[in-house]
Image (cartoon, rainbow, N blue to C red; front, side):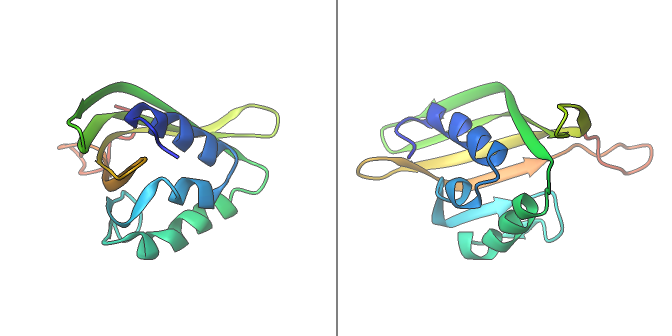
Length: 139
């Protein structure tokens, strides 16, 4: 449960590290809009995003994913908030070696209900190189 917006970042890291799709999805409102970097790129609600998250975390085998957030700035009122910064994903081998990584931009919109915050909008992106039109995955 997200009591403060800051709680989101720790809960996200822990859910991904534990490969707990239900814990990760529990951070989001059922109508949360996702602008993702993979495959479809846009999901209008949690139900449509859920299979991708379950597939991602379920396909890791013995690897784990370490998530770090950098340069997070939070703006909020009593019931609405948003945060932006950088998110770094690192695939970690069972022996602790970094197998691959990428760092992207992230913006997260929150809404506060009676007792908790939920994510209602998330946008993860990467800048595009003007030289070869490929994503820059380590900003």
